[in-house]
Length: 154
Image: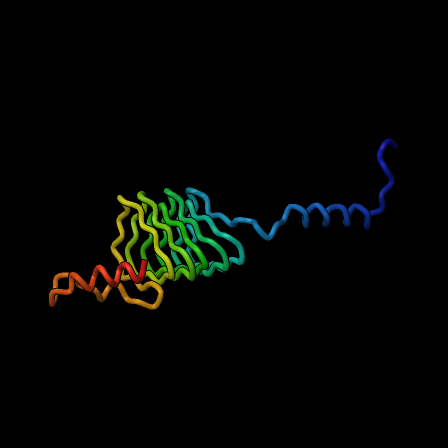
């Protein structure tokens, strides 16, 4: 009586338009605190983990492991910011940022690395094609070479 007389097609088109407008290419996928996922996850957008992921994550964007986030597995991504716990293999195409609250164990491959003071960072690391884990300042008097290698890789 008081409503408009829209056809079902008009209503469906409006609903589809509303759904499309709320979906953005800049969306962030999220695993919230208290949630655990076991398995393989593939994401084309940024991904934030505040819960637990046991398995693999292949992400075409940035991965953020929040302060309550825990990952046990393998992550492949473009950029990463770690505040929580990670154990496994982490492959980052560009920049890996490790915050002071982070606890990381495993193998890391990244182009650039930023580790804040206070972070627990027990890893074997490859950066920009150079293997840092092979540098041992306690053998063969390589202390002078260590400084050169780290400056070149920084």
